[in-house]
Image (cartoon, rainbow, N blue to C red):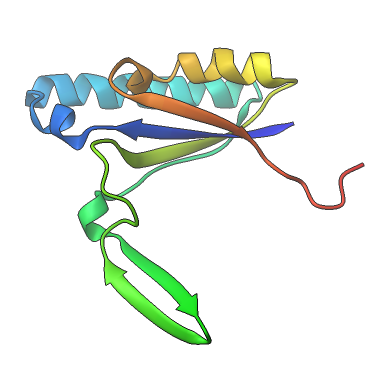
Length: 118
């Protein structure tokens, strides 16, 4: 099964880190991604630009509106994602727990709905 691991964290925590701490986090994150790829779990991983770069699109009554920023004001924001392959939810949770940013924020693990799957 495929699972989306959404990486949520408070950007202020990253802003407070030293250059060296950020470099170590980046190194650890890339090494974990490489490990997942080598073990056949990685499908794709991407970091996102900060929420200030986001726009929210809505269509109501056939009319489109676009607003700056994320839909909801929260302390934690979606900072990236890893799409993985795992045999079950327990394995997906184990994989998510190894994501270095899990120590600073939260990882939401959600199964992918595969249309037409039997």
